[in-house]
Length: 273
Ligand code: DGL
Image (cartoon, rainbow, N blue to C red):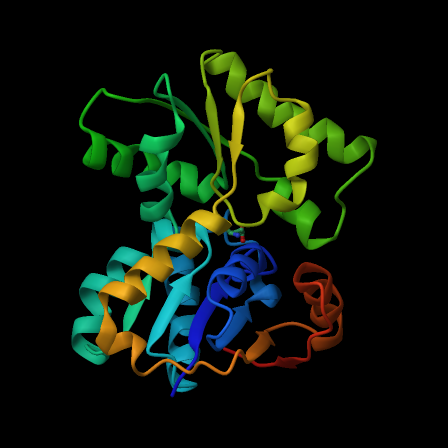
């Protein structure tokens, strides 16, 4: 019996893991944060693809038959190549899923006026993955999608800088930039798994009535549904409620942050990719 692998460039994917554990408490999970090489959001397609492939490979080596890229940047820049090119050749029985498609599926139920804002890393914005997926699912021209890249937010979260005047300045800068481009937006998607940690600050600067959407619960619901539809995958997944944490950086530092996220002490092992 094997764990579900959960991958992010750093701590951000813990916001997704936390929801996985809430929705699927009996399942075993192994989380890998590539903290040594974060952020991914400013890196090229080739580099994000290579790093993500290495991380997925490490999780496969640990036996994971299913890996969730709990990272929008990796989902935007590496998922398709891994799913279409790599898995059929090297690991046809394993699956890798991302966070963008489930988030886009949720948008239909969330936005009333079809004006959607996406706050994400520079890489996710440049990939055009959100507007492209929205167009694919809902048709051309049915949604007005405005994206703003927030390159300073991941470094703030990775350094646990979540409040204070400096944080407020950079939160406000990107939120204002979004609404300057489209004041009609009624739904803002946090299209980076690090951003929920800044959600209380972000919410303060949103116009009244605008809803702020975090991905964790959406992706967890989608994983649960996936497992109910794929009995052959579910049958090989461990269900002892065991959680393992791996990082490519210092284990002690990761343990401190991860314990805060998970509301419980966690033990962490450092690995290299
Ligand atoms: N947490 C990631 C995301 O969802 C990536 C952040 C980064 O490394 O830049 O996009």
